[in-house]
Length: 50
Length: 271
Image 1: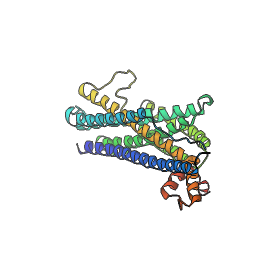
Image 2 (image 1 turned 180 degrees about the horizontal axis):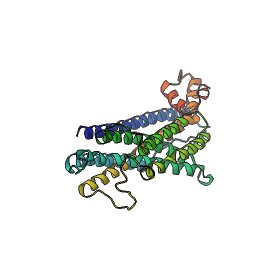
Image 3 (image 1 turned 45 degrees about the vertical axis):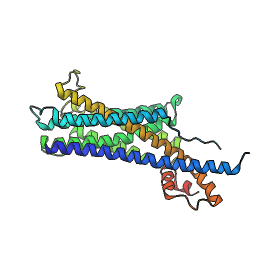
Image 4 (image 1 turned 90 degrees about the horizontal axis):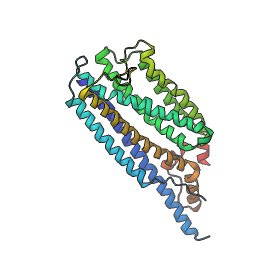
């Protein structure tokens, strides 16, 4: 039974860690995009209407 | 200046969450049924419980992930359907597929030790699956070589199609060669499953749960690819350059440079 438990633990842990890593990467990139967008919109606001 | 922010629709976000939740519940149920509810097998004993996971991860890696990557690559190479959407989807499928392929090899190896007496055998099924992993790792390495998006997409598509040739070899390896690995339980030549009752339902549930997990990972990974492409396409460079010229930002943050560096050549980043 220890081989069975080991198999489940390894597979589920790998998939879980990969999933967490995906969520972390997505959040980080979303934050960066927001920063870029905020920076751009403040630039446009400073420049005023063309 | 045109902006091309990769906005995700609320519908897709909602669907991603629901699929993720269903995958979690399905996987939990599979573990519960597989470890506590189903009976031990007459021949394999408790080791049969690994069968509720191992074929599921193999199904996702071989047929869903790498199959999808090959289909997307074909659609990219076909002039009428050429779009970077297919390239991004193929890249997402391969990355997720590689993780599932690693799970396939590890869970198979853990099953093989008490059954065959060895962790690894140079058996046709095992070897062709390991070759598949190496081929798609090569695909991921190729994607990291700096190039214009179209050039990268084209050579990646060819690489994916080349690697995908191994998928039918893995599938038919148990028929073409004398192997230690058992034949197909569900998708055998007679299409007559050799597993029944609660064991069959648990196996099927495992397939469904892992398929949902794959779809969730694919959606999230696709989103990451879209965001990376957006940031690497010069939008971030332009914004940082503007801020630098105004003295608002002293230097691009290492975090931003790291993201841009994934998609562009170092010379282009420092420009």
